[in-house]
Structure formats: C-alpha cells, structure tokens
Length: 365
Ligand SMILES: Nc1nc2c(ncn2[C@@H]2O[C@H](COP(=O)(O)OP(=O)(O)OP(=O)(O)O)[C@@H](O)[C@H]2O)c(=O)[nH]1
Ligand SMILES: [Mg+2]
Picture (cartoon, rainbow, N blue to C red):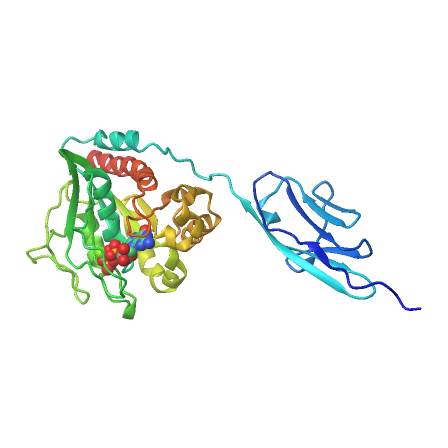
C-alpha cells in the first residue's frame, strides 16, 4: 500500500567550473537515491549531446557529465534535473572556458623601454613622431599622457590634468607633451579637448583636421562654436613635417563603449575618413579596461585572455571600421590600478613604426 519513494535530494551539488581551452570539463553531483531519471540542460534547453564530445554517466547515486575538448561554445549554465514519480529537484553550475592569450606581449619592461628610447626616426629633420589623441570627454586622453610620462620619466606625472568624472571637457588648451629622460624620446602627444556628450558640442571636426595638418599652434583655446581659421595668431600657415601629426589615436573608454556609440561614432568616422585620405595611420586605444573587465582589473596581464575585452575590441572595430590589430587595450595609471606599463609599452612599440612609415612617405612625396 502506497509508495515509500520520496522526491530525490542532492547530497552534493554541481560546482562551477573554469577550465582552459581544450581541457575536459567534468560536472558531477550525488543524489540520496538511485531511483530517478536524470536530465541535463544547458542554458535552460535540453542538452544536445554530441558524440565524442558529451559523455553522460550515472554510477549508482552519482551523476556525471563530461565535456571533452572545451571550447568557447561550451560555456553556459548547466543544470541537472532529477525526477521520479513523486517529484523533481535540480541544481546548476556555471562553466567558463578561459581563452589562450590572443595577443602575445613581451612582458619585459626594460628591453621595451630601451627599444623605444633608441628608436631612430628615419628623417633626421623630424625630432619627434607626433600623435594626436582624440576621443570623447573623460575617455582618458590626459591620463594616457600622464601614464606615458610616468613610465618613461620614472616619476608619477600629473601635469596633464586628468579630470574627475564629468560631461564637459576638462582639457581645453592645445598642448604638446614631449617625453624626455635626459634626451628626448622620439614621440610627442597632443591632448585635445574632448567631444562633449551634451548637444554634441566640443571640439569641432574642422579643428581636429587643422590639428592633424599641423595648423594649430600650441596654446590655442578651442572654441566649440567657431573653428580656428587663417589669420588667427594660433593658425600656422605653413606647417612642416615637425608640426603635422603622424598618427591619429582615437581614445575610446572600454567601459562606456555602448554609451558613446550612437552619439559620437559618426563624428569620429568623419575624422577618420579625412585622416585616411591624408594617409595618416589610425589606431584606437581602448582605455579603462580595468573598469570593463573584473578579470583584467584583478590582473592586468590577463587583458589578452579576456573575452570581455576581446568582444569590446570587436565591437569597437565594427563601430569605427578600424581593424582589431590596430586596437590596443590600455590601462592608465589610476589609484585603483597602480602602474601598468606593459600593455601601454606594447601599444607604443607598435605605433612608433606606423607613425614613422607615414612620416617617411610624406617626406619622400
Ligand atoms: N580606472 C581607470 N580610470 C581611468 C583610466 N583612464 C582614465 N581614467 C579616469 O577617467 C577620468 C577621465 O580621464 P581623463 O584623462 O581626464 O580624460 P580626458 O579624455 O582627458 O577628458 P577631457 O580632457 O575632459 O576630454 C579620470 O578620473 C581618470 O582618472 C583607466 O584606464 N582606468
Ligand atoms: Mg583631458
């Protein structure tokens, strides 16, 4: 009379798993009875078992799911449901598959700095390769200069005032920042007023183009209503190769990519189109990666293993039309992150060559 069966219960539950690409994922748990039917699900759908990939086993009260050769597509929430005639019970676990490093970096700071310091610009008349940093307000333009100067000059540099979070541009003067330690390093940066969110005011596209061409003289205060024009004392009529920019560096905050996309991308694209016409190399520095990815924040060396950052780079590439090999995730010096030279040095090592190639082409034109 009646059944002695009761709803199955878990004695041990599934544990979250983090594995490396290619490893075997083993999910296991144990019930208090053998009398149940087990059903595995992935992301709330019945698990579609693939031969030689998924192995489902039940050994007495134990349930095991093995997934061999872990790939990104194997990530998800796995649920095991145990059911008998009386009732059912389920438990879930998250599976994460770590990527291999998708960009290799030389993690030795000393040789990277020496190489950059001894880099010879191919035209002796050009003292520094010039980089124009351009991007939305608060993207981290000033912080990039501070970080670079701190790395190369060996002390924390804060002259290039980095702003507290705000929606209006903190940098309003056009300034050149050289880098020197005894002698000059072969690169200099111009930090320009950001593009502002509200009413899309801020730096006019015409001014950015003038800056790229070397017409803007340092000390000029940008005016969001009127572009700099000939006749102004800050307008350089005949810029030389020392005045023109040799590389456009678009600065995009990784943690705010979704927010800026609609508002600014069209403007940035317009500037890019003109820079392309001029043949100027263009790259993207994806800043604030520590804010966009907790794994990267915990260890900046994991930046090139982070799926979040890789996806941000793809998103950025699609939005701006810049190939991903020209996008560099960087992290600026910040009280939360401390110093983080390697990824910045890696980015610089790449872009000095591209700027030098452009300058050489211009010199020979
Ligand atoms: N956590 C973190 N914070 C950053 C990073 N880069 C910049 N910040 C912070 O973001 C804020 C804005 O940085 P700025 O360097 O002033 O940005 P900007 O692009 O020069 O801004 P405007 O001159 O106003 O256009 C500051 O509070 C910085 O400390 C980064 O890589 N990580
Ligand atoms: Mg600034």
